Amino acid sequence: MNFSDAPIDSASAARLHAEGLRLDLVDTADTAAFSAWIRAESRGFYDDEPSEKRLAYMLEHAAYRRTTGVWDESDAVGAEPVATVSTWETPLSLPGGSSIPVWAISAVTVAPTHRRRGIARNLLESELRTAHACGVPIAALTASEATIYGRFGFAPSAFASDVTIDTRRARWAGPAASGRVRFTTREELHHSARAVFESARRRHAGEIEADDALWAETCATDERSADKVKSLRAVRYDDASGALQGFAIYRVTGGEDDFTVHTVEVQSLVAATDDAANGLWRFLLELDLVTAVKAYLRPVDDSVAWQLSDRRAVQSRPYDHLWLRVLDPVAALEARTYSAPIDLVLDVADPNGFAEGRMLLSVDESGAGTVTRLDADADVPADAAHLALSVNSLAALYLGATPASTLVRAGTVLERRPGSAERADAAFRAAEAPLLSIWF
Image (cartoon, rainbow, N blue to C red; front, top):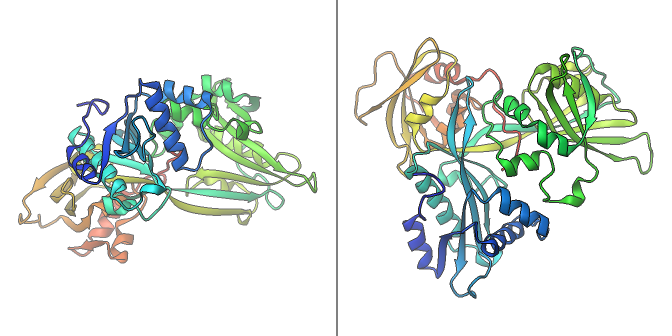
């Protein structure tokens, strides 16, 4: 069953109906209905009233997504929904370079007039049951609030960092790039740089594919906030052979009181190679009349701090960004590559039942893993590591962002055999910190 063909979840629909609410899919081919849904979603995130161009763009590029709303049955027919959610299936990059389908959950809003009526819970549980029914092994989202999604089995699985670099105290000390940086337009990048983004996202576990709507947001060509993008500039990096390998989109602010004091705000810096990253960073850090460079959604192990004459010029603010929810642990654990061989028994607790059970993960010398379901009272192999954990902790471990030993110390993972966490750390470790470089 395809994500776009799945029917509405009957359990959540029945519970909301008892509250005088209707859970239903939006016919995105119906311009009036989809436009009403877009206006409700914009209101939920305190965005401006969507322009006609914005509506037209979403009608063209986001109509393929599974679009769900909740309506108050006491409102007039055709009224805007009081809650929204949008979902689609997309590949998630994994350690080792492979990928796995995930159920991307976005646009979760509930009108302030309808709080505390179980709407959000039923929306999320509906999507998880639907994803599981469609055979999608993991659900994914980015969270505007950190306290909502843990109750549904989600946990932070990739972190990002916002960095500020004081260019007055640090000069570039990294390798010289082999290519060149030149100015371009956001429209030109939208046309030519999508393959570069795709190549770059595969370098990190935790990235999803940018569909048409997300790609337009990355290039700031999506008509979401036309007034806010007028100040953006764009550069591209071409390697020594002239091939496009990276780009940056940024704005320069400040200078009102002192024209020698400006700040560069980097909205996107995408590099398919280390050489491209070096060339783009050096360009941004050496701009004249600039005293600070701020960059958003950077990897927590970004090498730029080691490429400056004074690493104390860098201030980093890490935060959780990608949240995952494992629905099929067998498919999830078998999809990624591991960094060390291990036999690991996992006792997973899942209140919703999707990932519940005991399983044996066996990883060979090549890093490939196979998973065998075990009975709850089955004997654990004598040489196997053994951990007991919630489905939330499984998501936290999955991409290698958080070591099992950290979660043991936190009390959210139980080490049933001494040394098991250390062995799991070695197996789940990723060569680079997982990253999601966009919002969705």
